[in-house]
Amino acid sequence: MYIKDNIEAVKQRMQQALEKAGRSPQDVRLIAVSKTKPIEDIRTAAACGMTDFGENYVQEIEGKYPLMPEGCRIHMIGHLQTNKVRKVIDKVCMIHSVDSLHLAEAISKEAVKRDLSMDILLEVNIGDEPSKFGFAPSELISKALAISGLPGINIKGLMTSAPITEDPETNRPYFRHMKELLIELRSRLSEAGIPEDKLPTELSMGMTGDYIPAIEEGATMIRVGTAIFGPRNYK
Ligand SMILES: *Cc1c(COP(=O)(O)O)cnc(C)c1O
Image (cartoon, rainbow, N blue to C red):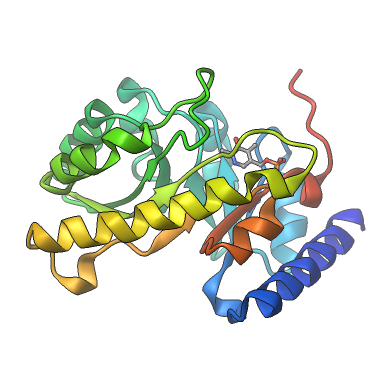
């Protein structure tokens, strides 16, 4: 039962980080990243109380969605092409990886067509890595203001994947920067007339290698794969 033990271990480390930061357990949601893993692993994790699962690939979401255990949700955390929006929009509870105005427009259009409202996060390329998707911090506010005017979508917050690192501490400044960006975004959206209860609050950041500093710096959702399900085999 390695998955059960792994979940216990992650929860324990989360708890320690929360205590250290003076935050309460309900401030952070653990998302189990199940990409490439079989539905049996999701069932095992669900039996241990997990309800939120992260997936990256549209085809995998289409396959797993009808088999998801009762009460479980899928979060889309991978890069999404605009022409695939219609395939996932009714299967996921949130799209974490909105990385262009173009994609936001496609989600908005599809949401309006289906008379639904989609929760999204804006992905930020916080480490300014050429290989990664996401808005540059310098363009985030202007893009967010444009996106906030689109119908059928709610900007719930920001998401990032910090650089891969051996030492999680090296990512702490990036997580701190994300928190600052969220605060700035809230104030700019507020100035633009968005009511207080509609302002973004979520910070999706922290993975297996760096979720401790992410929690300490204000993450509200952490996305943990390897530490729960073990290493992935992409073949
Ligand atoms: C795969 C993935 C994760 C989980 O990564 P681990 O290092 O296995 O915890 C989190 N977020 C995103 C966007 C991912 O693609």
